[in-house]
Image 1 (cartoon, rainbow, N blue to C red):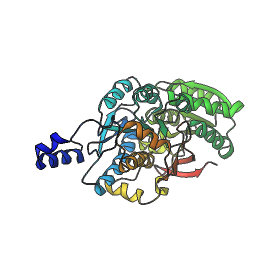
Image 2: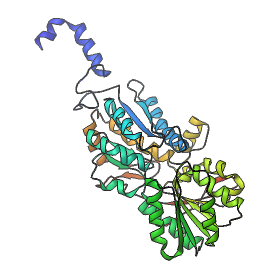
Image 3: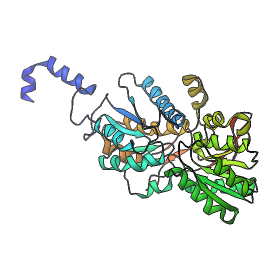
Image 4: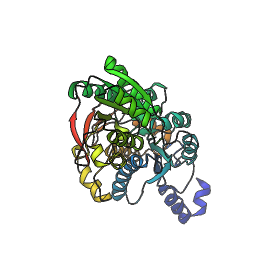
Length: 381
């Protein structure tokens, strides 16, 4: 203290100004102990912005961006930055990107990872580094069973979505012969296995395709030869659209049922509007027009488009982290504890987590392709 006094008031004032704006190092870092205002904090988005599943990642990034932009409007003197980590949905790229996010000491939390495969690859590193992640879209149930202290998600997992999809197939479609197809991914295979187990003897055959595959003749032949009246596909919209197109071209009338990885207009583009008509898509996500507050109109104004899949869930995930920052948290370890005890209403649901990082409130909706658009059909109770 004595040496500071000898330097005079101007130096003290400058030091205080630096501290207020995060210009000093140490405890103001996201990796430090907290206790001071830090105006250099970042929230990361981790998911696909390029590649075959880029549309889903873009939706999520937009939801997070909207929350951050609204926060910055109210806190112009100490803004938060969105840092994007484009995984291309590729688990092989996830560890390197995770390390990049971890090494940026101003990143205090992650919205993501977006997909289950990249989550499995990246989350052990985030856990080791103590960097909290809140996924708006990764649904594989096993992700919550690893004991990761940094893992949270704001949506129901496939242990709820899978049985809901099976219920819709049996109770609403009243299908008697179902072929279950998956894309061999962590997400797609895991979900398809749950649907297959739930439907039991109604499943007359199964098939596995590969991501980036384009010729699905053998799969279509299998569906037709079994006389299937419904097909369930576990995977993403690029392959799903091509399968449905080739089913239509072959005159196969079976109802095509898929899950949240297909809930994107890219599916309709790949299949063609006529072939896609009547497709059923399940999702543990709220129809965006049912989101609370002014989310729907705010999103449409910001991006000149209606909110798409998981945009509202990403808004909620980012809001949790922003609430932590607003409360004065500047350290990663304190952010973990903040998220763990969070209990406030979001735009999609009451945001609260159990001991494994799963949301306390879960709902699954069925959507339908009608008139070239994906529209809500019903909540699956």
